[in-house]
Length: 254
Image (cartoon, rainbow, N blue to C red; front, top):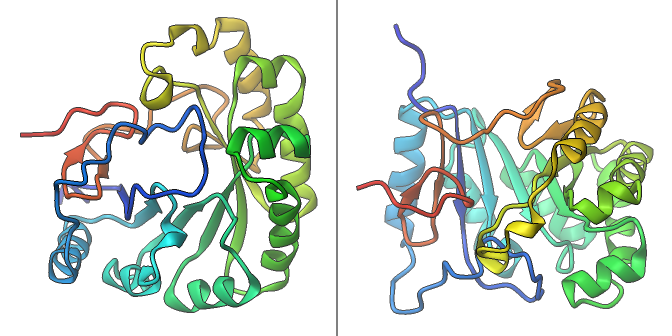
């Protein structure tokens, strides 16, 4: 056969969020006039993705942990045969919730970290004390069997030039976690702010860091060069069920 039609999907379970990140890629995607997918539609979505060959599902937002039914939603995506990742800012995490998510089938807890400096991260998110809580949760995740920790960082020009990407990688590795590096995009809260885009020398610095086996460079593992993860085999599905190439290319397929 030709193999799976879909490799991975990303589904935004909500666009609600308690943080106030200037760069949020979902900043303009919320439409309160549109209904969210109901349980029957979610179950159908999960079955369709499974039937089309998806072996990885990433649940994102907004802030997914704001949904009390998140564990039920995980079950719709066939967690026994699918790798389940969850993006969160960590504010609502606690040991009990980590265990319930693990039991529901979450394999990788991805916590956003904008800076290795506590005050900078908290200011970026508008949530005081968040950095220290993330460090606590990384240690808790490390203690719990069956779920892994992961840090996500948008590698801004400033962070690269200050050596902060390497510092965040060191934090991840010290906690038996991995690091996902995302490139800045002029979309969402940074719409049309092309000055945030990286220059070639910034990319080269990230390529060096990307050779570390603990690093996922824009979703690609074990590569020293950038490869865009979106395309015919990787898709993003909005809270309302629209299918788009990625959260950075906000044009729905017909």
